[in-house]
Length: 433
Image 1: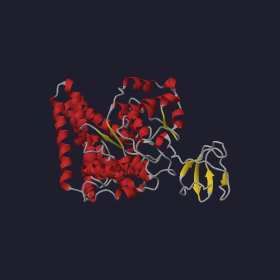
Image 2 (image 1 turned 180 degrees about the horizontal axis):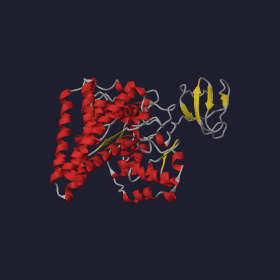
Image 3 (image 1 turned 30 degrees about the vertical axis):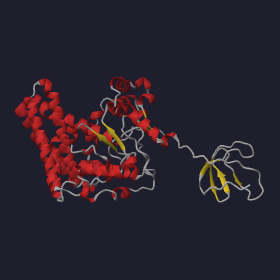
Image 4 (image 1 turned 30 degrees about the horizontal axis):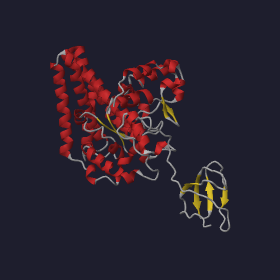
């Protein structure tokens, strides 16, 4: 008989050889068939007189995790609009950057200073609202003012990435001043934030948040309980702990960085020494709480929520440096999330975060144009969501301890008898998307 002719390297299932069913994935190369299924054997197909071999070419069904339907179901269960396909290993970050329009990298001084005007005006309006609002409307005034303060942070953020002005001195001055009401030292934050971009979703090296280590979780009952509370109910304010741990310890910085770090710290301490007493002198201790502390907590709410939503989901892995891929971490490992429009305006579109990780040099006012380009060229690889309770519940109750196979293991699977904070969140948080 004539042998079944197949092109080289076509995947197929060989069925019924000598009357026996054999299941496996085979590759045909020339006249040699290598079966990579159950038997792991090699044999030659005879060229001449041979017994009849009945073969059927059947497309191999991809594993469930590779199918669009599976990703759709996963997206729905996690609170996402879309979970992207895995980015191929051969794609480099420069390949993605090269598809972006050149205009998204251009600094526009008018737009930059317009963003400053929006933030300063909205923050001042928030303080006015606090001064005039009756007690029962104060939470709304604090929410507005805290969100406006987040806009100040985003302006400093652009300055740190050299995306605000072509003048470096102007960027340093504006960045330092924008951070002062937040008690954030500009230069220490800039140095550590640059490392976050260089090592996004890399275990240990990423200076933003990463999963809890199992050894740390098991080290002591007191620490375990503290971690559960911090990564559970208090996670929307965990950036406060990050602020304290990373930006005031001189030992965390290189000798070449120390001069600039000390200048920033001096500015922050000067603001505290002058600004806080003035607030207390004019309004009393409760005035300091009303006009500074509560908006500051509102700012840290957004700082924490933005950070964890941008890079945290059960399907997004953190990897060791020898396994890490820059393009996959920045495109596949960063999440775009839509928030209420007033939040996005006051926060200068910082939630349009994927293009910012493809290139931090893109100014905040060009992020939407850059994201549109990414959707057109790389849309099937993007992770996208609209803020919802299911998304938050997934992060707060599932994304805890690092696991190489599963990415995360929830606290209540490792220590169910001690996981009351997580049990509370599972019951208390709504589950609608």
